Length: 285
Image 1 (tube, rainbow, N blue to C red):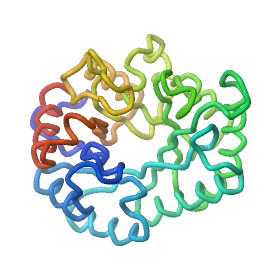
Image 2 (cartoon, rainbow, N blue to C red):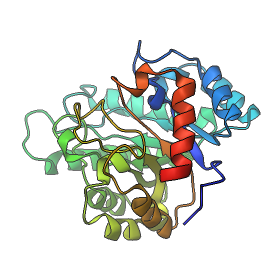
Image 3 (cartoon, rainbow, N blue to C red):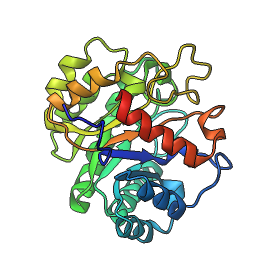
Image 4 (cartoon, rainbow, N blue to C red):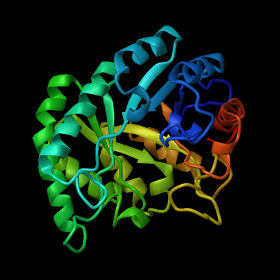
């Protein structure tokens, strides 16, 4: 297990931690300001959201590399299924390809997938997962041609109805097995998987298919299932235990801090958020 007490170069910022994935939230820093702030603190990686880099992906990717910050990935594809997504398969697949193009233009190779919820008019998750598999299969050749890997991110079961019918690492890996592509893997987000007693077995099964590892914490009480994530160390998730298992499976990449926090961290100055993030990474992760 890596020792981060004196080296946080493996730390990455997901810009959602500063509120940048939501319009009119946070301090409104530009991508350039965020890149510079990461570089000043020795934060080695950054993950953008599509709305931030629209029309400027190549420029922003170059700017990050010039500052010595690696673009670790991009959030995210459109929902592939369910009530919150685009309403035709043609539109979904077109936007899927666009998100792959943006990932490649940034100069990174990991695109996060949040699959979407239960398909309108259906019950349970099985049929919706079948639709996800079909739409993934149609996009994989394009991703492979662009050199982009697709990271399936299972979400907490509370999101199953609207945001993600994919709720366990087991089901995500079953989908990887079905699709049988080296360009498909999983993203492990502590907020979504910390509760799963089967997680150690599934992480060992995942091996080199772990394409991303996301840090945050689960607060008690949690006042908003979407927008009240905790800073590392403020909640009940076993951060070091999960990281130990992720790294035992072979993962040696960046640890990406992704915190949705409308009433706490998004209201603080971004510099303070980043300084706390570095300190907590060194001490509790």
